[in-house]
Length: 198
Image 1 (tube, helix red, strand yellow):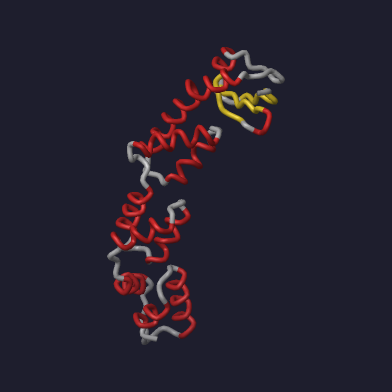
Image 2 (cartoon, helix red, strand yellow):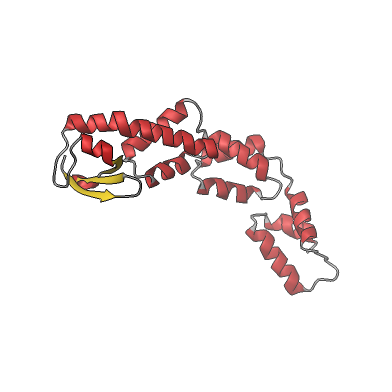
């Protein structure tokens, strides 16, 4: 494998770009051990050694560190590791490792998210937020079925109270504005109209 480019970063970190677009992060000391130079080559044996002895171990530690600070979905963890410059096969190895200990569990993440946010978000908003975080739709549906106990009517009432809604005194334009606000929050139109008395 030919080394096309060596990019210097901070604190002795390098990014090595190989032919075919593959790149990986490594420290200067490690690069020196393998005599890496631009235009030089890595044997298959050296590449395998770098993967198993350096990159896999480092990516696993990085994944554990990321998860220690905050629970993440598999998609979010994958993004973080890719941002750190790890090749896809190394990222997958680190994800498989943390999944084997159930440190990453998208269903558990979805359940926890729903439990903590159902009092301020509609069912649709919860779905969309979890979908944005890369949780599979079947896991979202299962988690909603198992965890969602939010009464949409009560949630709408709380939001109407917060907006100082009064069906008697508000003009049509203001009612329409509040109706649109609740629609954007993901509530069903018929439920909104019923609670607003329109």
